[in-house]
Image 1: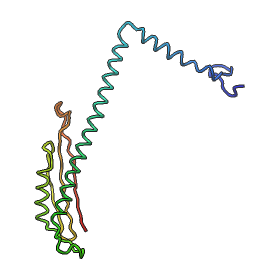
Image 2: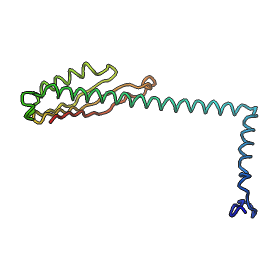
Image 3: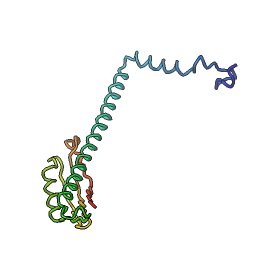
Image 4: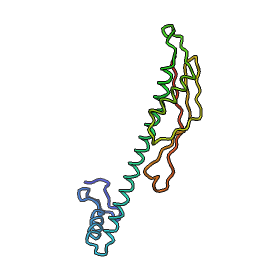
Length: 168
């Protein structure tokens, strides 16, 4: 007894061990495409390969864009952290009295950025805001870099950043 297994087009019970009738249809279509002499199967295959290559290139380029974004963001954050840590006055650090020389911190940030940021990035700083007590430095701006598709007329990638460093 096979219970409620019924063929959709008649009242007979279907045997689940026999499988459906669709496999023969798929096999016939595949056999027809395989023996096709008009060339449509090879054109279809070439189109499928081109589509897969295009998709894989897009995925790889998006990975490269994310890697560049993460690299630039990491360098900016490291420059901000280093500038704040270097320019905190150590005279009363043990007493938890912290003071930041904001102008020297700003100069250090720009110096670290000039030496650490690779040439493939264009950085535009919109603002550098610092407070002496509590020691904090916030830098905002934009970073621009090219992608592989720049040679085909696509625009460069631009993103906004906000690097913040506090020490208290």
